[in-house]
Image 1 (cartoon, one colour):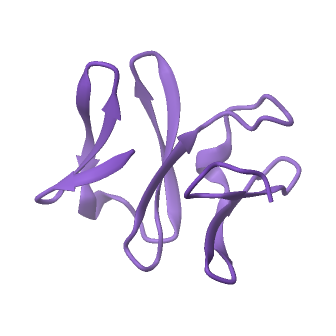
Image 2 (cartoon, one colour):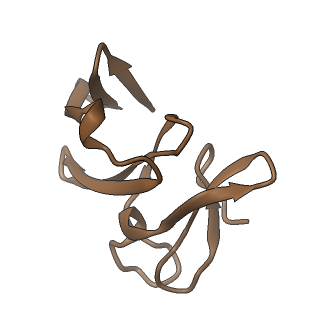
Amino acid sequence: MTGTTGTTVEIAAGTGWVTICPYDRLTPGRGVAALIEGEQVAVFRTRAGELYALGNRDPFSGAYVMSRGIVGRRGEVPIVTSPMYQQAFDLRTGECL
């Protein structure tokens, strides 16, 4: 789960909310990787300004590359396309489409 407090991006973790970065540091349509309690997380800001977070590990290749994927939409569904094998993942649920 992601959220903003004023202009700060935060992720819910086991110990509470963890600050990632200022909101304006995230480029619209791109992702960044963050290390949260020893786990890599990919954080995305869509062109519409929405925030999403998924695990940074591509489940098909095992590589930690999801933050470098292409952010877009399939109809009304916000997606990220893995840079490894080009599978599309729903940013809301993490489900492979």
